[in-house]
Image 1 (cartoon, helix red, strand yellow):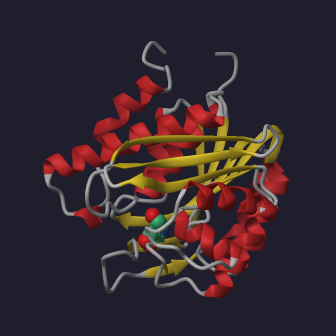
Image 2 (cartoon, protein in one colour; image 1 turned 60 degrees about the vertical axis):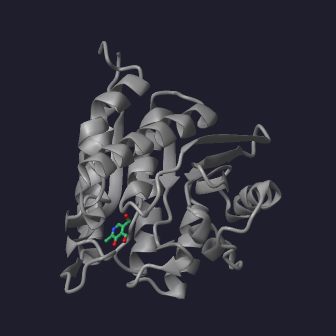
Image 3 (tube, helix red, strand yellow; image 1 turned 30 degrees about the horizontal axis):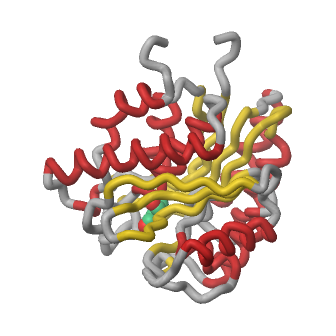
Length: 285
Ligand code: PXL
């Protein structure tokens, strides 16, 4: 390796309940990357399945942090945003992308805001419109089906959709400005779950599915997007990268299921890190 790639992960810190930065940082580190973090908010737990969580919005810290980074001449090979702490952060994060992209850098926006047809409790429809604006600064976006519907201002279809719908959705999402789209949580058969991707420059759609484990597993969107980015940064194609992300996320879910862990504390992604390292072709590194 003649260069260690640098990535900046922009998400909240949920102190407990594995998601966002507590997932993104270890996964990208395991991928062999120098991963810096820009925390958007600090919460005692994430907002899904807990009540009474604390919430500290870090919007005011973003510009001073960026000013210091500029004085250091920092640039990154990838910038990756997820859960944002306020509406005002959307514009600030777009500026961070523009100011800290190295040549050939990849910008991944996971428009974290909703699942199962509903916005997360602290997000407003205004936030959804803002997220659509942030997607125009991305090379790749990775919404789930609910987020895709919110981004486009369309109705959420629930479980009743087909291949035509998914392929239309992938193409409509390019209208937001990103040329590569990954849709997560796609399922055409009760026993299979996976992802679809569209590369508009190659006009190429790929799918990858594996076993569907019943129930809702918290934090899997962040596990998926972080491992997707690791694969892309390793130079894998978009189609191969969704395969890596589906395989790794399923392995994390299986560990969690086998251990019968309380779902709101997130998945045991740590136990599957050796598998991810293998999928990324790093075992001999
Ligand atoms: O995993 C998505 C996520 C990230 N961060 C916070 C969340 C959620 C989902 O509920 O609440 C704070």
